[in-house]
Length: 230
Image 1 (cartoon, rainbow, N blue to C red):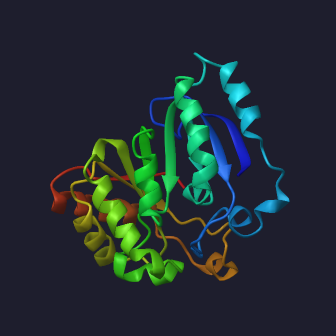
Image 2: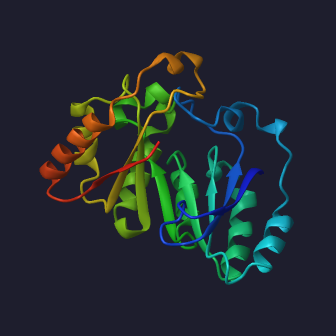
């Protein structure tokens, strides 16, 4: 299940010191993905045992506040992950889980024990074929709808990839989640990508993203969009 581990992070869970675990495997194929090994060939990494993580956390109570699960797509590991996170909660830690929204039923199963969600809102719902997620569109739609019922517990996130995202694209996406608390934009980084062709794409300038951010926030009437460093 776990194929990577950043033992201490000061940014992954806002306002908290966290440990970050990476699951292997993903059912989407975003060309700009910056964790290609975790997506396609995660078996090259040694598996990290849940017991080792639980012991590490037990010894660091009062030093670490939260556990963040990312990937890959963590909810693919529902059967193994859910009991693990229940133990984490019993130890007194906060839990954050990242997801691409492709499994609405799993999302509901985790809803009561997750303190903060990171939901990747990749492209407009009509364009999920671009990330090979067309079969999961209905699930993504339902996850977005459910998540907007408790916006204070959700970070919506989009990697801004020029072939997929233009100003009008982002304005339309904003309209879909305008009741959200925060929508993070992260500029595409061509350094390492799942699709080698994506490395030839030039990211937008930071100043242009700031301009679009201001326009979108003005249109929705609040500071919805926050730009994160790449």
